[in-house]
Image (cartoon, rainbow, N blue to C red; front, top):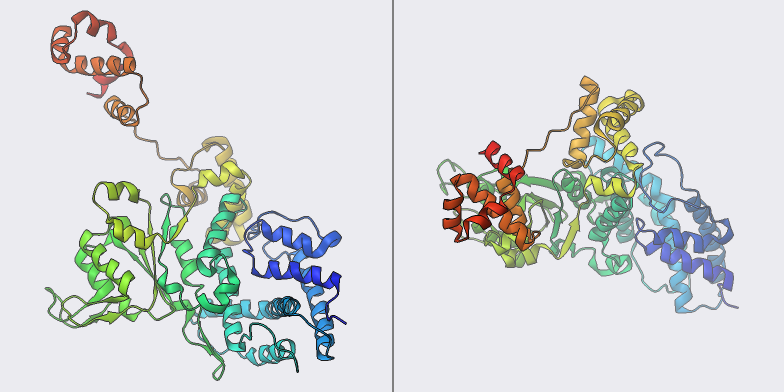
Length: 514
């Protein structure tokens, strides 16, 4: 007799797909529906923190976990009694057992993460590892049965801790129920685990530092928050003898704003220096690249502003994982991961020779684009309430609901629901703070574009007809000469042609702006 019947096999297949899918993509909903059948309860297509009620349990997830536990226990008993098995069914059983193990320790792992962040120490002893080891042996060590992957308990425990940290940081840093926000959360998840979590668990977990991540997007869209979510969610090995992790995850992320520092200081901060390397270098100093541990991350913000000479040095770090301090001659090794971010158009910068192509192609193997706020609101207008309430809770505590109501009312009546929010989330946060202090917010007025700038932009984008081009150019030159004859001479046109092409409104605007 087979140890898995047809009904159980269908359920286990759905659970296997669910366990390894990207949880922030809509496919998760389809796998939940496949697993539960008629018991599935329609749910939100986007899995995000519920700002209005963050502690509401996911009903479908609870139902699946309960059923997984029953099926795993039943199937294990059959296996222990010597029921016939196949490799494919053993893989399904193992996936379900891992799903059950993770769900059983999810809350305790979450508590450990929150406690570590509050204490700013992520390397404390986890006393419940003994319980985990007992359950791991019960479900994955069955006498007479050889499971396919043979994952060791410390590694699985480290993977579960990483998955829980990734959930925590992605949920905490990337807020909003829009599809744009969902796509961003999914992209961050892939940046951490790749698109194939099974392969990641088996072989890639200790190789991701070789992949540099580049985050692009407008100013104020949370690029550093994305970097933190990735950097604080990396794999850290677990020592079963001491029940501690090899590194303190709470201290594994260091951000450096390159646009705020001169090139010499950037080099010193990154590479370190030897005594006497430059004026003021009174002693040896280790740079961030050297002190960064294997699970650590260096975040280089505003990478588009980086001096070309330092681009070359960083290119060497990415290619060879080695560098030399300023004034040094001995190679040092970089063991961490680099994440870079910019709001600049790097394609344009490369074309102008300001950014090295070889450096760019080393940076962009993993590319994440953060969406503008107006993109989220265009897709899901209700997200404005979620974001306002989330910000209000940070700045006003128990008064958050009342403040959010005031902000929404001000935006609706004075700013406008169709406002583009050019400053993105950062501007929305200032709006909330301004309403808190002054009960009003007035967006900065955009600078008027001069007629000269408008003409140059139209020429550059090729949006004018030949007749429009001639008309605007004749008017521009006439505003400078004040003479039909001189304008005709300069443009080598007939005087009557020049006179017929003058645009009175454009001429008045040119004269007003000088």
